[in-house]
Image (tube, one colour):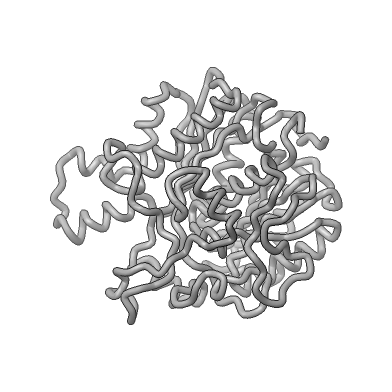
Length: 393
């Protein structure tokens, strides 16, 4: 088995998920393995669109009302709680210093929207504090008596990868023995979705498998999704779903939206990330792609996949099934790859058009080996993390 350059084992020991499929990890897994997208025609968007209904993958109302008034706060706490319970059931016990990293872009959108548009900026002190991104994290730290570092990170759609890499650095450096990484994006309001449609990257008027076709002909872009996904990362070597071997991030410094057409920094990210993980490109089994179904991203990833990972068994993107969950996208997709390690199956979307010759189509038996998870965030935020079999697998 490969070891990363510093020799530290970082294990994904537990997973919790709140997604368009429902509140819980099992609903996410059952949903993707069914091959049926979580996106649905959703009413209430006539203020921004010509029609009242658009295709979205929204987190349904749910959770414990005592965790907060908004779906955001309730989802963060539910995902973290489930991840901790899952890790505990698998034999994990908290070390001396447990921290939390929250991967985030927009925060508590629903309640801030009501603050300005419904309540005229008149809220009690308690209701105002509930809007702060630190509040659900502080409540989780207090609930579990954790006292390690606690912070938010953002790298747009690459935020989940950024959170995982930050957590691994904390563990490698000894700053923490364990880190809860939670990534949350519950922001699919009409005001937020319409600009993405206008940019030409989001599809709101076509069903997911029709509109979002990563690495296939006829793709129009992504369907917007929402999620909060938590993972327990631990220095304990056993009992986990997968190991995080390493990774890297780079910045194009090219354009606020477009990818640098030379792909120089994206290529450097892949090269550096694989080296940090101690994995030879020819040993990689799969690319878990960013794969939003947009021309720029899919072209860039397909090019590097063919150039750098010629021996890999396949490439897949979960976005037609889960939607593009923005700041939580990478975390949803890492969690699904961890569950694929655990189950032996990759729950890829069904291929619906001519596409890449190594595109994984539908539920498929997994080939053993490392997986590269690529994430490309708006503004030139490139990232990969490298996952591998858990110890003892």
